[in-house]
Length: 446
Image 1 (tube, rainbow, N blue to C red):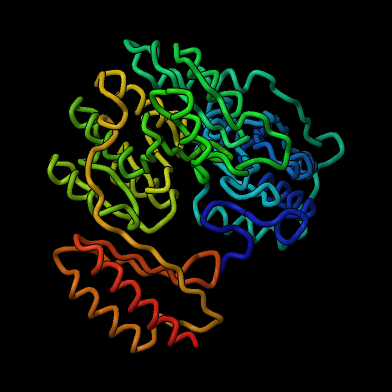
Image 2 (tube, rainbow, N blue to C red):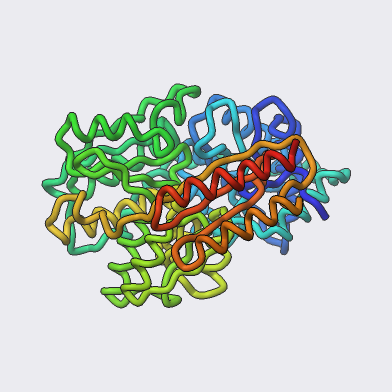
């Protein structure tokens, strides 16, 4: 059965356009609420959101849908995605919902669903909910309609949980930390957690107005963070995205530290302390070859998955790993969270910084990445990767890079685009390989 609504991270789209309409949001509430009514207890769903203007609309529509089928609703207001996952489990909810389009602009929104265990739903669960969307869903009897209430201390509960992931023998006293919250879901909790641990906090991206989420700030637009770190003389900078499940770090010189370096640092420290499980870490096919070589030198394995933090998490759960993530900054530390958590990952980075006593530029630089180039080729239709000329050029490129590089070619899951990525020890060779493959794809798609 093919997916109509759910993508790799829930349902997402431009608001007031299919599928992200109030009508569909209400139906999702009815369908998911019906699907997760298992057993005779009073059923409960918890709902959080980021700071988008459309969050009010989507939230109210979901509440109407859930209560219509007899589910009670607990509303948290603006709170990070990992907080919803955490609180869904701790509050014994049957379902958790996060209203967010992550790092997308304000005019997009999305619906992410978490099961009672705090993990994102499986493909099977999502397909069953999709099937219910096409049916007439029975409404609850008048006396069984659900109730809705707001919990005001949800942010405090999450701050406490986040701080508990930081080593008890350490403090952040003496560190000036710039934190960019992308005018998003963590605009209150991330600065508060850092301040409570003793840091001198310089907070930016903490004045949400409904339309400025991810706008020139946050992990996907790090220039503001870089400039603020340098101008304020900070020791380190931390950037989260709109729903705070992604992390990018900037050192004291204003240089960006991506997810690969962060994973290398955390995995190496966990291995040194005997805390690393699964024999290594899990990353995607997009992680740099330099990371793989560094880990190999440390006796740490690397397992790769296709792109998407849900696939990283699936492999982590299958193999018993406790560290995983993506080059883009999704960090999953399963000892502390059931999904990506930028603030938790940041605290692990800060713990390493405190213990090292060295500048961030030294502590966070774990390896030299090899030259890597990614290009996108848009096509109108068909399957250009199945064209014989494209296959021939790809085979030649793989032979040239054998032993000294890597090639990743994949169609986008959200748009008609072929992504061509190559990496290797020679920058000129990497560029040549990518350009040749892109040219072949373009000819095949013409």
